[in-house]
Image (tube, rainbow, N blue to C red; front, side, top):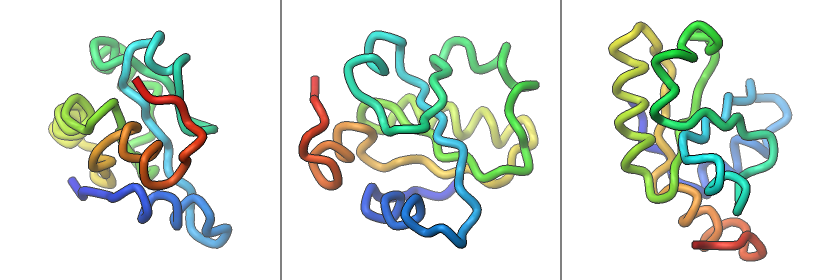
Length: 107
């Protein structure tokens, strides 16, 4: 698993030539409703095992949560199940709000 900083993710999302990642937000629904990155897929951490078949193991996936700990656990779980192109957003959505999108609410 690769650790990805928020500026690195912002640059990736802005790169029209590069294959865009699946933004896998593993926070609870209320957290996602409070703030999220546009285009993110909300799949709470506790539902990941049931949703594995809905995820494409061939696509790059960026796991994210509030601060990066739950998403790291999900990334490791995905790797154990054959996913090979996994990144974890270091600092999570909170770091995104602080470093990339200052208009995003925090909690």
